[in-house]
Amino acid sequence: MSRIISLQTTNYKRLKAVRIQPDQNGNLVVIGGNNGQGKSSILDSITAALGGVNAKTTPKPIRDGEERAEIILETEDLVVVRRFTAGGSTLTVKSPDGAVYPKGQAKLDDLLGKLSLDPLAFTQLTDKEQLRTLLELVELPFDPEALDAERKSVFDQRTEVNRQAKVLQANAASIEVQPEWADLKPVNVNDLFTKIETAQAFRREYEADVREHAENAAEVERLRAELAAAEAELATTQEAVESWQNVTIPDVDALRQQIQNAEQINASVRAWEAWTEAGDAWGLAERKAEDLTAKLEAIDQKKREGLASAVFPVDELGFDESGVTFKGVPFKQASSAEQLRVSLAMAIALNPKLRVIRIADGSLLDKDNLALVESIAREHDFQVWIEVVGDGDGRGIVIEDGEVKA
Image 1 (cartoon, helix red, strand yellow):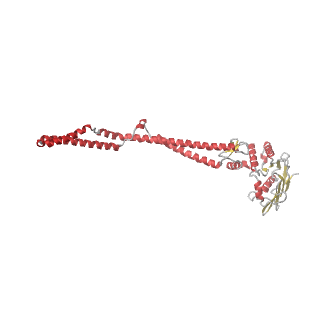
Image 2: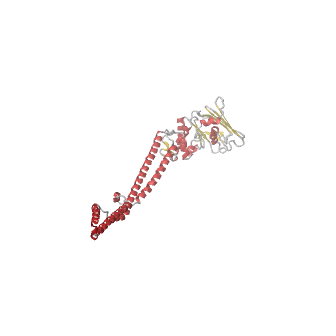
């Protein structure tokens, strides 16, 4: 199915009875006329025949004063007949030999491109709708939505890790330490108290032995009668006293001084340990953030490589997170000629079977853009129906009062 070879419209909207058989050697079918004469109804009848109508978009498909309307659109492969009455519309789709397709609209839907009935509508789509339409044409080695979701997840993780890193950095900075504290070891105060108790026990034993020795010596002097026993006891205590000569009794005063210094030392050790742990946590968070940054770059590189390998309908056409781009800038910032060329290319790429495109409001295109439309249509062997105000510089089919002007 390629082009429209005949369009016959009766009583549709502003039209009376119109039959148009386009020049099959041309690529541009210009529909001219003044406003309100029915030229828009010609293009609308193409849309109605191929895509159907509904009460919301076309509340009055039948011309005022008439009871029925009919559109017969013939292509090289199909004959499409759409009839309208007050009760609704009917559709018949036949092959050239008269065979009727049981599911006519499904047959047409299979042949129509998403933008073929109005390619300039692409320029009016939202950024997201333009992007969605473009992605339907391009085979990418990745799922853009999944990749964007992965990137957002990693980006959010990195944001949270960086936030934590700043908190840990501030925590480390709030701890005051001295460099010399790095060599300090914690002091066990309980061990010092135990040493004091041991030293005091030694001293008590020593003093007890000394007193016992003195008492025994006095007893020897007083009790000469018991000299033998006293001397034996004296010898025993003498040995005990002599055994203390090789024992060093801890300095209790020094131990007490260590206890007084222990709290300050331990506070310094704890501060140093806290500062070290905070610094380690900070460093770990920064390394984690660097890893996540590397992941983001890998995702972005994957997207860049995918875009570089993708084949787009138009050179320099692409997309980013915000929508479709052309030559690296948002599509809606492109010139009108660029937007026109891209939109036509999109319509052509979306419409490989039915090689017919209609453009309303063709009067908005200047001479150069109109020539561009014709050039693109000729290059891709498409038939473009375009509506203009006036006579189309003498080359248009002019509609006057619902009929083709002689």
